[in-house]
Length: 98
View: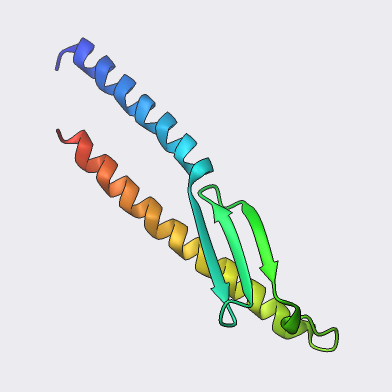
């Protein structure tokens, strides 16, 4: 293999990785639970961007239910992000074969 081709391929991979990093910050997914009473939006870096909790699920005598709803909404958002990233990685790998 020509060393210049190898170098060019490495540059292309580095460029694609940089593009993916910027996409991670822009990518958003919202998970919800309790029929939308709790919603959490995260980015592709798995950082929480926003949380919405409806008043009707805030019951000081039942914190456990709220904790379960928050965890469930977060897990839902993470799964959606993981699915999107998997699709992006598949598309990226397909482009590398070109």
